Length: 102
Image (cartoon, rainbow, N blue to C red; front, side, top):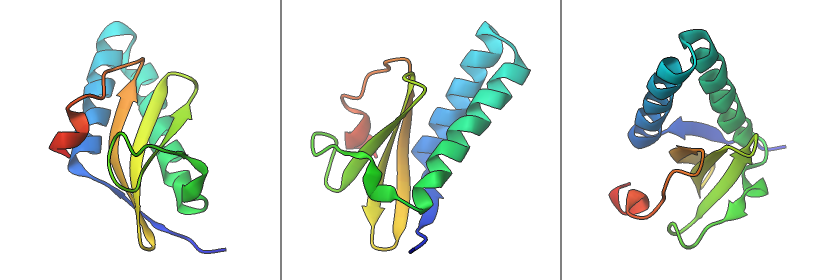
């Protein structure tokens, strides 16, 4: 089995920070840490089966998405033997314009 490299792009890291801040304020920092860590683990599992996500040509060339716990969507590109995680959305946050920036 091939193992792909995982790269969390700056925009995706910014998304994780924003989700952490929001959850820290609406729940508590421990809950935020646990949930954001779970998101990172979920994205990092793409190293073994990146094609398992749903192709999202509406978000860009070679972009796929996977869901986590029906509340989180992770958008990523498969590029050669690597996976670039482009964005993370929580609880139905909007996609329009996002991918144009990334």
